[in-house]
Amino acid sequence: MIAIYPLLAVLLLWGAKLAPRGEFHRDFSSVKSDLPLRGFFMLVIVLHHVSQQLNHPGSMRLFMGVGILCVSTFFYQSGYGLTKQFHAKDDYFHHFFRHRFLKLAPPFLLCNLIFLLTDIGLGASYTPGYFLKCLVGVVLINTHAWFILTISLFYAVFYLVFRLFERPAVRYGLLTVFWLSYTAFCLYRGSGLQLFEGAWWFNSSSLFFLGIWAGDHDRALTVFLKKNYRPLTLLSVPVFLLFYGFSVYVTNAFPYPANDPAPLSVSALTSWFDLLWQTLAVVSFCLMVTLFSMKLKCSNAALRFLGSISLELYLIHGLFIHLFKGQLITIKSDVLFVAAVLSCSLLAASLLYGLLRRCASALEKAQPQ
Image 1 (cartoon, rainbow, N blue to C red):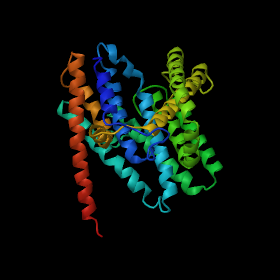
Image 2 (spheres, helix red, strand yellow; image 1 turned 135 degrees about the horizontal axis):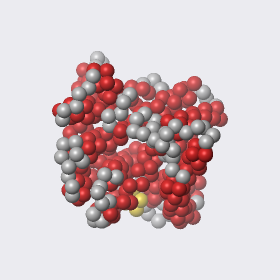
Image 3 (cartoon, rainbow, N blue to C red; image 1 turned 60 degrees about the vertical axis):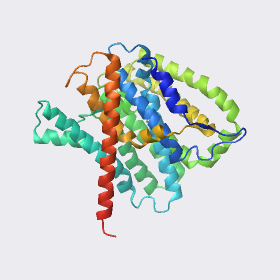
Image 4 (cartoon, helix red, strand yellow; image 1 turned 180 degrees about the vertical axis):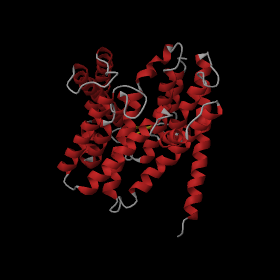
């Protein structure tokens, strides 16, 4: 399955445009430029989850640890995008929750319903109360959906802090306190598959708040990056590889605790050491991606399509992982398993995206003018 790497390279670089010598792409941080990269990183996240289920990962073993890197880009772009729009629109908070949460809630609830109905169709039974908990996410029937809950929480915190306080120092102070408290709570919860259990709930989440800072200082940051582009670019790759390699080493040497650790126990304290190196890894990764995006614009029809259906693809692909790993059938061939999950996930995500767009359009037309 080593062929997947050149295929990914072709997908990423086909149609890419290099900025002229001495110039940069002006829209490197825009939503339009972010869409293709979002699609690419979402595809890698799917491969990350698939690789963890293979009998013999082989060449796909590299995907097993890169989920944190891809997720960090989503956190960063979310924080950055919120802040840029906040500064661009005077009435930004007027319809904040409707605009933000109506993009997340319908696909989240629909995919949870599909998971539940599939379970029931295969013989599972649910009490009405437990069915409702699974549907709304109080119990995670789709454990990959944790990001939707986390980013929704972060949206709400952003709204409260930026709506109620005007001084930047107060905002950053409150956001820092929240992030540290959120991380400490997740660490206390230990490892598991339910709400706030597992390092993935927090180990790349600092990038959301870094994105807020970058959005607040966009002009100065862009000037700095352009002025120091060559040395920063030359250093970004080895620095990232160093930080990422060391983060992998320390998390293997001092793994996050499995059960609720005491706040001042050795396992809890070493968890913060793990988090430090993982944070350095994801920050350096996002910086590296930003620097390369300034000169190289990766965009083609396939990437834009993946970016458009990225939310639905994220929420539905876990269903096919479970179906093809024993819930419905067991595909023993790793190659066939990867192909089946990818093809079915892409098809289902496309159908869901089309359905949700039609529903949203119909609701919009039905509203009184």
